[in-house]
Image (cartoon, rainbow, N blue to C red):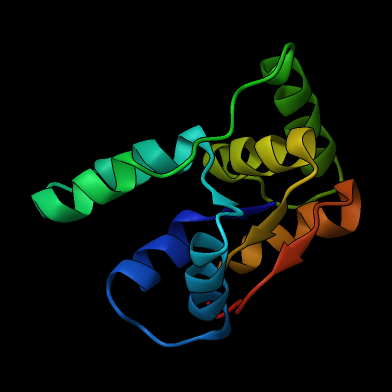
Length: 129
């Protein structure tokens, strides 16, 4: 299963090019793509999002929160912060969703690399920003 990060989902919706966009397209075509609940909230927070895009996003499979998810997410963020790295809350929540579901994250956001190194997050895609 591939979990699509907000950065790659937006790039896909905007028709951008990139390895991550190709992965998103293939994941949805093969029905192996999903998004984390935080990604859903982030994308729907865009006030300029068109109704067709909104409707399409609401049809995407959503990773379920598992028991004690919030505890593990807090502990994960503490681990990253203790190592001296930054760990934005939304990134931590997305990473924890992926870890809980053994899903590979497709992202172009470099901030996930620390979760890959320190927590074993599986990561694919362009990492431009």
